Image (tube, rainbow, N blue to C red; front, side, top):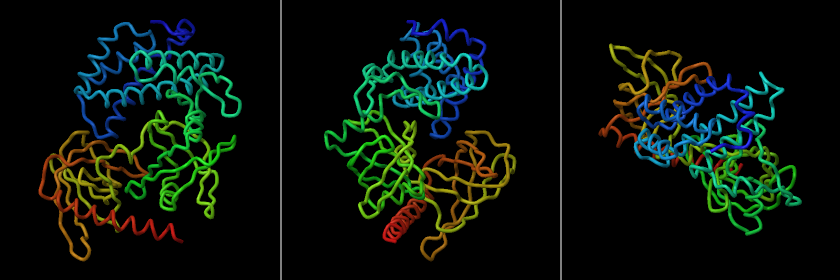
Length: 377
């Protein structure tokens, strides 16, 4: 199956090896961030197969599906999420490479868009009518396939057409943000849609959460085909409205994807992580949930992702001190503001998790109280 611009895109064949490598590496990082584990060799093979079927056109749909499902342990949703995110990344990365290295071939960004869209439609990641049907808010003229300002591909239809449709139906949209690790969710009505922004009704608590996180996140529903993120343009406290601009599709919303709220401690909590061969690092608890912990440290380790570690720290349970020993698995170690952030998940069922759950419940209540106080001021 060939897509429009197939021949022209292959004039950039010398860029393909770097694009393929980035495509695979992005999928690996995306899985680490989502705290999911698959066989790394199967993941590399699967992503390379997807890449080649995007660039060359789908040649064996059954093979691609079988390889993806085997790689992701028959988790269709995870396979779709990671593959779609990598597809978005592919267009983004290709656009930047062309802009920096081949400005005379800018037309090939559209051809790469066509390649990704053709693959997405073939596998049901994208609905065909959502690609073809593009609208401009004011006059309903058809709009060509678009690239967002940051180089990402709008794979899911036109955001503003969806928002306009929701407004015309007087339907709610749903905001979901994190406030210090605690998910804050509320319904909203669209007040008006203009060239310079979209105005929504907003609750005081949601407004504080949006201000804290820096973005407003609208989640997928029957009117919104995929998540949307946007920046604050204006706030009208008296009218309880917020105007947003700089809209883009959000490929991930941590508040939506996390199984447990990851709360932030109410004070600095020292922690130690112990690894194989008596290795150890010291740091501070960044966030914590019954599913795992994040530790920030100035020390680098030689530990590999997937390695089992032991964590020790103490929790303040409203006047009483509780010493915790927790066995965890290192998901990923990230550079974080000049330090290292070790993201770990609970390795197995452990009695100590009950105490962490109590601490998290306490911190959720305290965080909501803080949020309410901030919203009233």
